[in-house]
Amino acid sequence: MKDDVRKEIIKTRLVEEIKNSGMTNKEIAVAVGVNIAMITKYKKLIKLPSITTLSKICEVIGADVNYILGLSDN
Image (cartoon, rainbow, N blue to C red; front, side, top):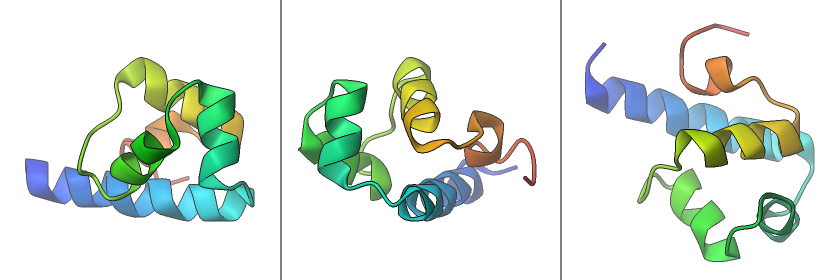
């Protein structure tokens, strides 16, 4: 899979799962231990989160990291 396609999948799924969580960017940022601006940057793919940070975000919002990364379909 091309990098541009993978990045678009990550962006789309991360935004979708954050929305489904019902949590605000601020709530997620506090729970993960990052600045609120970083959550916005991750959602817009201005910056990619590290695997550790992505794992923490997924844990907080109740999402599967493999789904976010496009490695599974659910």
